[in-house]
Image (tube, rainbow, N blue to C red; front, side):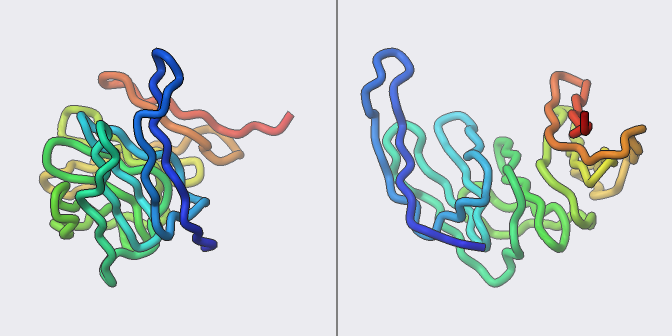
Length: 168
């Protein structure tokens, strides 16, 4: 992937003034938005996971490692871990050190979502998949009745919303 140095800006929604800006070294322009959790931003980059203080822009986690395979899309974050989809599965990493804790085996999946009940939801092409985080086992797979791929997913309480790209 093409990588460049980028600037991340934080702007006040109240008055439009800049709160801070911070350089993201080697930020892949093909990755999606940062994931916000409490006072932190987490960014999944190619072979990097970066943690940034959302209040002042200071970086406190910049994990570059050979055991980080190419990442895809957003991260999910809870009190302890980041969850990111990679070539070898869904990686669970310590939120403060970036060290890999476990990998849930599943390939070609994207955009992990936490349901608040101990499960992580991912998608692959036209399938939604659920995994139990603690046991790292698959709960279920649902093939959507769509001939086009899932483009975005969201979750509210115990309901997963999936949007496919239908051609008109």
